[in-house]
Image (cartoon, rainbow, N blue to C red; front, side, top):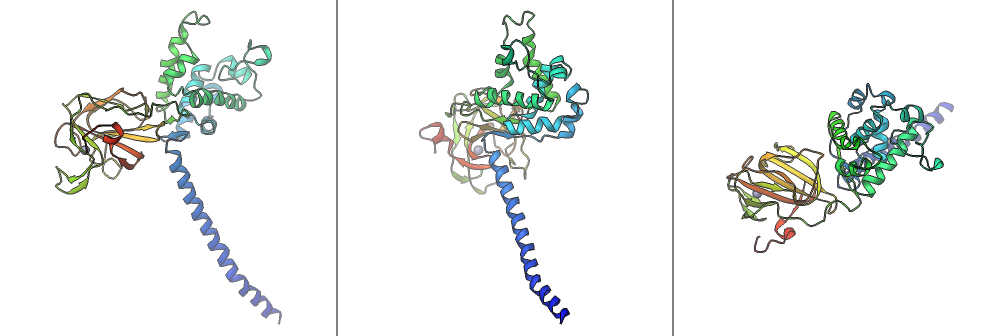
Length: 345
Ligand SMILES: [Zn+2]
């Protein structure tokens, strides 16, 4: 009798177990799907979109002789993530401000960012209970300057952090701030992200990216001149002399700058640059260049020369293939309409 009851209970439990297991599986699937969604959103120009990999082990390698910051790579990354700022920029400024983690302010007061103490009428640097607290406060300050005020380049930050020619800098040390921070950022592999500055980045109005534009192919369905296949041509072609200047259509951050390889999203484009524009949440692409003059992570300004016209990749002659994208990897819209070029298809 007892045995029978036990078996019955087990038989009852079996479907329940199966159900719980499959439900768990479903939840896991949904979580991973949601995770993917979140990741996609963050690269969509909202907040800080990380365009490069941040390798904490490498950061710690670079911080090996950085005094109090030794082994603090993860802490920098965590705070940077929370504040929507570039971890490499955060590290570079911290190293510059503290002489690589060895200044008195950071060793004795856990203050890496030169934050003054309002309790002493800003006459002394603030004393933080821990280095983590000091870094957190510095992260907030950087967030305010970079994200809120739109000082999203080292140059723009330098003009505020270390203005040249001010009375409290008689020996002109501030002149070194920008090159020093840039140099340290390079040592850590260069900046990894472009930040949305809350609407201050760019004008939202694109300029034609070449001088004396001559449109040789519109945004149309056509027979591909190289392959002979029918295709929809997703950009505008400007036939230009080889080596002529290519200009950024608006302020933005370079998120791709190299020879496009098939299967990696930029096949047939040759030397290609993709710029993310925070203002419009759009991307502009510049293909077939003979020379690339910008690097990933670099902030460019509207009209800045980013490369030279060429005929690399799938191309029959020197021209700039220009795209305006609604998402990073596609969703092209007709640049002629965006640029207001009349008569072009
Ligand atoms: Zn084209």
